[in-house]
Length: 245
Length: 245
DNA sequence: TAGTGGTCTAGACCACAAA
DNA sequence: TTGTGGTCTAGACCACTAA
Figure 1 (cartoon, helix red, strand yellow):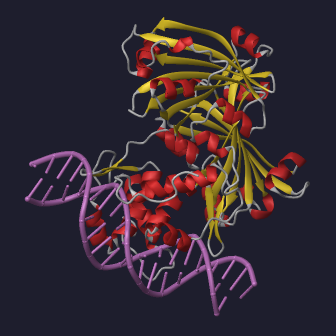
Figure 2 (cartoon, helix red, strand yellow; figure 1 turned 90 degrees about the vertical axis):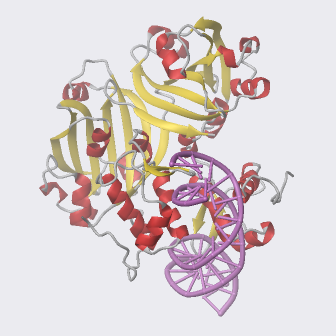
């Protein structure tokens, strides 16, 4: 078990601490989909915070789609949906687990290049600065699902290529070794035709369509750190979301 | 000007009333992008509600992307972004205006059919029930942008095909003539290859990829009313969104 | 220093679901 | 009737921005 109480001397707000605690219980499966959560009164008692603070935390979890509330009945752990994929930054591993695939990774190449102008603009750096490039083939149940090309500003994470990204998640290395957390991203979604090179890696016939995502991710300091290109096999991958109003 | 105060005898919660009021001022342009909103203290004074209630309303507007807050500086009206396209149901006309295109529409066909089983499932109706089908070619600056095929449960909107959908927005007819408002939708986004028929209508070469959206829209009574297929030219259309966490 | 939004408390009354 | 979440109040202190 992890920390399960609020540190009242910490500079982190109570509601963020409680959010991490409750989210952990859901993500780690202490509370399972469909389970009723402790009622607000109990959370107030257990964590010694006010009702407003508890409700602030529950609001966040509702927004995230992890729980839902029913007036008069209680608060329940939600069944996971693909919805969450579209609004939160999640890892390939998480994404595949939600889709009931076993994830796998092969590194296709990794090298340092000088930044071409198109990417320099997206990452707001000078043309010619060094970029670390990691190209990975992503597998689902052993079959190719997508190609990911990561372009990282090398100055922020020197020597990052010394790790093996078939074994280490890139985001974990960034967090643990370089204290860089990617907390915000902007992406564009397109349909494209597979090039010969991509078709070969993804084991698909030509011509075939791909779902193509270009994403720029920002660190906790609001610096653009990574430009990512993902090429998904259109026969295996689609996006889902919900609209309001 | 519309209603600009809170009806304290209404059964509608204060925060919902205040939300409508403030949202109206933004949408109708009383407050323009970049403008500072009145500080919380002023809203409390003017509308005679507590700070919590004011903040509940502002939270909603922040979530919707209409405003943003800066600690120590104030609360400001946000500049519209394509972001909103991905999370709100908007019309083709609105979408094109945001993208700085002049929208246009041609009706390709309209007819009544009996529901095939795949669509019956999506709309939760019996196989063989009547569907009104409207197929429209959408233009942007006079050039083909997309094909939309609407499948409507005919029982909910009898005789809907008597209107001309080159002139009348479908959603407007549904609202005005049948009191059906589409307030919620679920959609799946894929990449596909254009068929010969679609390629011809969209004036593109074969083979070409398309961005394909399947959407089921629900009325205010939570009934599925419309199944919509949209085929976008991939060379002219892409989706944009932002991710957190 | 004055004014802003961010966090937090301790109450209150209500609406709804289930027993 | 009891227990749940939904709405609302009137305060408090803090952190940040700009003058």
